Amino acid sequence: MPQVNRAIKRVFLKAMPHATMMAYLEKHPNARKAAPEGMTFVFDKYLGKYSVNIDTRFKVERIMWTGILEEKLVALARKRVRPDDIAFDIGSNVGAISIALADAVGDEGEVHAFEPNPANYARLKANLALNPSLQNRVITNNLGLGSEPGTLYWHEDSGNPGNGNLDPKGDVACSVVTLDSYCENNDVRKLDFMKVDVEGMELAVFKGGEKTLSRLKPIIYFETLGRFSGPEKDNFQAIETFLLSLGYKLHKLHPDGSITPSSIKKSGSYTVAIA
Image (cartoon, rainbow, N blue to C red; front, side, top):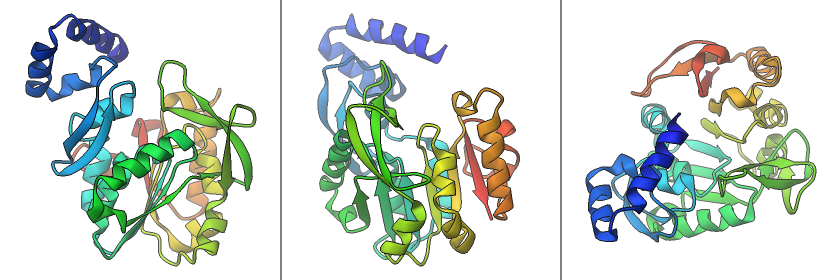
């Protein structure tokens, strides 16, 4: 139903004179999620202080215009990520969470951002360029992570520009490496926090990083939307079994960034794993 409500709001907003619509959106930030297409500008209050490019074609950027993307994750990062930490943003899209993590790790820390889609990657780089204080904190990679190295192809979601997944066939070729090989090749000896949002490829990322997860034990925030559970919820069961075998325990994330023990089935759209 949220999508239906958003469509109704979009019709309502498009019917307004432009000046009236902008005044309404200024007063009601949450309504910006339904902003009509055709608006492009720089928003300078993301997380209250950072500049980002907004193109209202993209759902992620409309949400960024509200001032924050994934409030629970940002709250978790503020509680759990410390200055000088090393954080990985796997599936970084245009960098909304990379910026939040870069804010948390400070000048002594690092964020490694991974985005396989070349168009999204270009927008990620452009957003970081708007925030010179963060550029030295974020290492960007036009790569996907998977269970084995190779080439996969970007497949964009119908009706949701900028969002998609990697498939064996498609039009846009994307390089894929494993988490283990990346960490070995880049001498990553410390990893404190990982956000993994890769549209159903989470298990592949974890399997390709078994050595790293076993050795470095980062906190992991990962997507568990129901549509990626598999026909018998076997994908989520496989993820749970795999992480438990590495010594992790799973948790439900609450709006204030706190966590309570849970299972993937009961944790909602995102789950937190802590060793």
